[in-house]
Length: 108
Image (cartoon, rainbow, N blue to C red; front, side):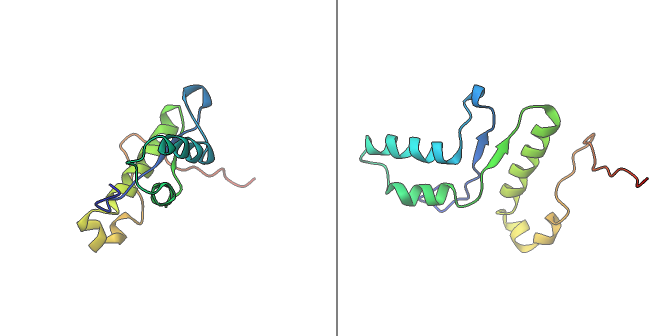
């Protein structure tokens, strides 16, 4: 992805019990790993590219996973030739069958 300038969609696990980490923890882990592997490209260049966009937060629970998956899909679709030429097609986001819609309580 880096060498061919392909889009990168970062995803971060929110749950520490499932291996989750903060962006800073992931950056630190990469730096430690890269220090032991001389064939890895310049560390700060790689990190800048990986974290060019804020990573998608992966949340557990069906409805939250749907939100995370939609964000991942939108980020990928934005790089496809059709949507590069027709970006307004994605302005309303994505809607999945059976998905909960937004709701607003009526004023009392």
